[in-house]
Picture 1 (cartoon, one colour):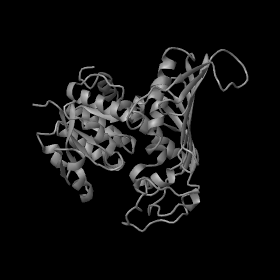
Picture 2 (tube, rainbow, N blue to C red):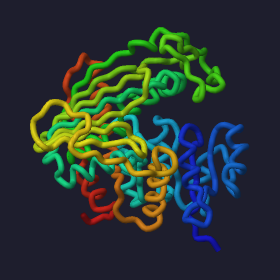
Picture 3 (cartoon, rainbow, N blue to C red):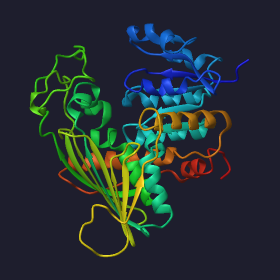
Length: 393
């Protein structure tokens, strides 16, 4: 008899690749059941995952003794309710990023995990991306000294198609793209810099997509919306009927260890690119691409003019699978954690802190750039998760 972890997946939309990564019959985990509101999606489940059953109501999975753990990959504004129900049902739960759409929703999830003692895992898969791990290894070795400032530029060429044609464009569902899209990057800033944001300010606006043609409410998205892209950005049409999130934003952060960081996001760039720069007391690193085979370059031999060849060039390691192998790696870590517990590279507290920074930055940009302090987490919760989700820290 197989001892595969039997996983129930809630939501098979844009992150169905997580379920695909989890379906490894005979190799540790299988998708045993899936819940989705779309009957067309449910009809395909048996073909996607042999032996899996499809249901409309996710509570069926939570009530089933045949389900060992659940993956929550539903829209952001549903994470709090579904994750808390799963935790109360005693099912180890993976919540796709962001953990929630407000500080309060994140804290409610963390508190529920603490009170129930059920294992909680958050899908910040960028911690498993080769480019991020390469940068972290460089910093850990001391190749650039002590990090003092981190800059991130995020150009999202398909932003108008991916984020302005569905629920992502509605701030009631996401808070804003400075939270929803940036949660990964803010978490990486925290991981590389070794601290959490305590104070933020930001500026942003809806510069391009605010006046473009929108679909009527309850109108389906156009066929091929994730495969066929309009250009230039002003030619985009069929946007979501609610568009009230920013398409460009700039965020400044002060971390609890003194590091100063900045993040920039644009959803009408002609190219997709995510660029990190970390400057320490003895050097600088910068990534040129974030896929296997791309490079992280280091300058650390002293003052000079700009040298594109750098002093040391590190190649991002090869990896197969979605997000440069990160999805497969993070699902493997979740399955091990759900079964055995222990430490993980992802961290629910870190996930909460990235949401908190993004949420307060969004408040700032909608308040003319007013600085805001990030509210601290309950010390009991911080201690509980620092102790590997075991009471008695």
